[in-house]
Image 1: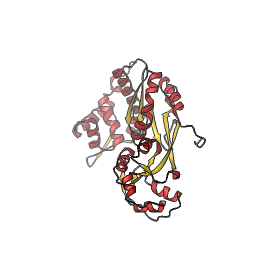
Image 2 (image 1 turned 30 degrees about the horizontal axis):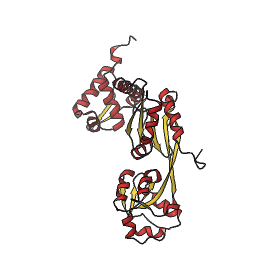
Image 3 (image 1 turned 180 degrees about the vertical axis):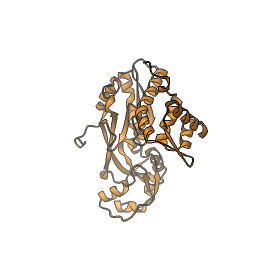
Image 4 (image 1 turned 60 degrees about the vertical axis):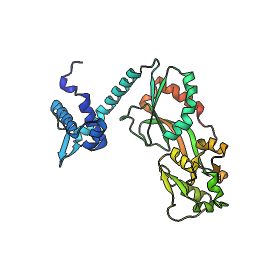
Length: 303
């Protein structure tokens, strides 16, 4: 390739432009790239001078991308992603390649990780790198081959594999139950309730399922992850709706007790999601095939 040097901007300048498009402010870009705001501004000015195109609008000290810059970023983002992935593979340098996986913290640690030794035994040549993501993200903007995801996904250009349903059970610590009088689901309205941030209507839906009418919001404390709400329940801070895969050991040891075990509710499902452009990747194909053998097999699974 004998292109002009001006068509090969510095990676640092391109990263600054991409980050400004994604984050929306120079201060956020500076924090992510560990630079000063003035350094970010210089990177962008250098890029504009090299390309000979106005890429950034500067109004009242606020930076924003011009329409042509937004189109440019959409084109280069995948290239930056490929460079990052190639560099990671070069650094790790496993014999059979890598698989970069985004996981949900609780489901990943409690459901996937205990099963991974079997995959490692079957495919020792494949290295799996994992990072936590709580929300859906742009596969073009982050160097992931696939992700563990909860619920229906609106990610464009992706395929998915159903892994298991999430069924929740109302539980609490035995000492909390001993201090309360719980004879019917209605009685739970007098107990402190623990809420999960990602399922804000979980308790309302459960009460409706068991025929308890309650107008208005339910009081209680809110947690951002199942691991923290699980610990809160174990220490007697309230009653929680927790996934059955998460509390199997706690129920077996008696550290948690089911309040109404016959009223489990299906809140949604977990999936493996991947870009269609990576469907033929050999490592991802082997992982999908193996993960399919670990998936929950039930007649009630959605098709």
